Length: 611
Image (cartoon, rainbow, N blue to C red; front, side, top):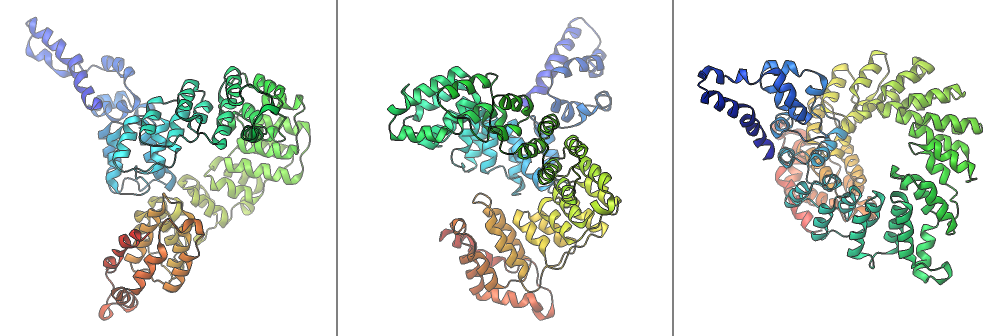
């Protein structure tokens, strides 16, 4: 509502008052022409106070002159990480083909970013799409909203039936220091969990104390342990000392009861690490060295893996130097080098290589980890140290969509060695069209694995491009298996439209059922929709094999969806058997019309109710 009113307020401020003044002075009516008010110098002045997305999505639409005035890239790009005017958001994302160019990861990120920027109406646009990937009513979206302190979004999601994933939303809000969201979630019955510990991890001491007043005495040792780690990582020394005194009542070790001994044993190996590394989240404080000194004085011993955990942090170099000077143990300096390489820390890697040579195996690991992250500077350090990258490193870089790293590796290894069909398949899985085009232009070989990878991780545009380029699709229906796993009907329809075949023996459906056990409870409905689409389109089914695949799922998945019962009901239905026969020969030799088995798929709600 506020965004809709803003243009009117600007109109009054910039237009009505000057016009009234001119009329009072007896000026002619022609002086009220808006063109005399909407002057470039005036617009340039007030645009400084407008959010960037308002300029890009609203202001530039006023007229051609304004669009030309603000034609720079900072004014022509909508940033989804910031609030987007509703009209602009709806124009871009409401249409059925709006997400054709988005990869699976991008589709999943869209509702998360929208929730974080707090425009509830924009979430309504995504909800109306009825697309699993962009569906805002799922736990990860509520956690994103909570982490950004968007209380109105959290309330809207709750009204729309969004489920909570334990205490994850509360912990996300606590880490961000959003007290109002925390209070609302607690009122909604969300369990406290590790919220106090995550508030401490974020350095929000007052919120931590408020949450502890809710349930300190009822915290199990696991949450008390995480609380202590959070305090050691995100709070200063004084707070750490106070909380340590509160938990252990200022007593010596021999005075603690069994539960307190258990807690101290639980934290003895991790408090110093938490103080050094910021609980592996980069939230460490400036006085981390003082905290380490004090913890050592309290009898906490130096952990064996402190250096290795530190090596993966962004500012690893000064921390590693300090730890090594104090004699902290290093089991394998090659392992430290691998961690720094994966983190992209070239300076820390140089320091470690100067301390001690690493063997060939750890050099290969380091190269692999650097390639996965696309860290060209690290690859150059390793290359200068004599470690030659492998084809597997090229595949790793391609899997991350890192074109600069792939280009660097191809230049060092040569195209004949570096460019393989596995590399192309990995690039297809990254969803990077730029990388795929680059590889194709250099003659990189491919096979059907590339199309299958794109069906799971890529976009409709990517699938269409691969088909146009002549990429093999295979004849076993693997692209359907991959697309069904995502639950994306749009991708399934795209694969079908491009002429991909499925196995006539029913193995496509069997593999799709088997793969379904890999999803968690919060995504299971997506896979069910993918399987339903396959059945609805006449995909052949080997019922015995499909039921066996469903029954073979690990026991801890069995409670999520009674897939075996669903398949059995479908198999036993007399009408379904007729449709299965018709799928082989068609009614009177004709083709089966898509959707013929839909009535039998209506037994799905009944199956779900039997759970």
